[in-house]
Length: 459
Image 1: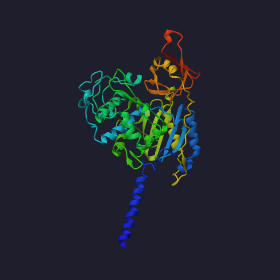
Image 2 (image 1 turned 45 degrees about the horizontal axis):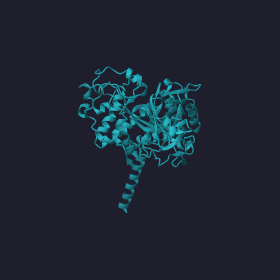
Image 3 (image 1 turned 60 degrees about the vertical axis):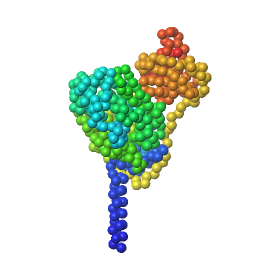
Image 4 (image 1 turned 135 degrees about the vertical axis):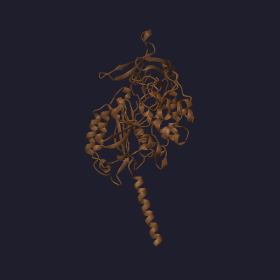
């Protein structure tokens, strides 16, 4: 009898330990399957519906396109366009951090290898000092290499420090050269493409709903050998990525990214960030900060794309902006919105809250029509846009494919000369040029708010 009581006591203590582990900060209580589950009532998640309504008003007054908030692994808030793919911009860098975590864990990549060891160079030959930069220096934006890079903003290149002014590992500077070269190193050392690896090792593992390889794109420019790697993604898929990190790399019982990497990569490694000081600190391709007294780390893309992870609140916040229209929401305004959502927390969630299937409004694509191939063939070729540069129109299976500097977009025919581009959704028209100088050009037509209402291609 005494032995039986000891056995029962051990089982009880083990149950308590498992319960603590399953509900400790940074560990979400649930995972989505093929689709998300949503709280039927905000109060059952411990939030005030009235205060969340005030936060929604703030969202609606901004240029944000969508917001998705995940609490304990379930949808708390879903506003706007959460099923439309937008440009991720620099959020791509946190995706790269995840891939490095996987393959450092597999001992395929040595963080202490130098560029000299890896035989990495560029269009403008790297100096002996620059070649001493280590992989870890690139992950932390401390390479000391200020070489021109693909997909860099004017400001990023205008403010580049002088080459050779800082030794590797001694100075933080946000430079796409580091981030792009990480892709070259990754592919060289793993013998896998960045996008293929992301699909296999991350997207498929966490059941992303809208991700496909055709929504990715390498952008290579003459100034550098190392291409930028671009993603388009929906808010609901970004939320899965955030939830993966919230759970320290685990997904439904399986370790996808080593826990040690998740912890290490989201620590504040660099604290002197110059003009980025409002963002706090920088880890391994993650920004690290605090909000309302709570630890937070986040992936950030220009225009207002964010994936914010708040471990102590068991919360993931995704904010997306329609960057195709050049909309923009400042970082401070995004943090104000997230603060309003955090302030709506009033108590503990119910142990067994009422849940419903999350059914966000799907994108409504206009009905496509069949157009004869001889008509489509008239539109094929290269076009030049004043701001967008070279645009290539190619043949798809039943449509046209528009290749731009940020990726490929399928153009669905609405009639013989009007098309609907997926994701971008700004109508495209093809029109016969009236004069030779107009031929093979593309022009954006603006509305009264100076937003693009259509793009005309002159053939």
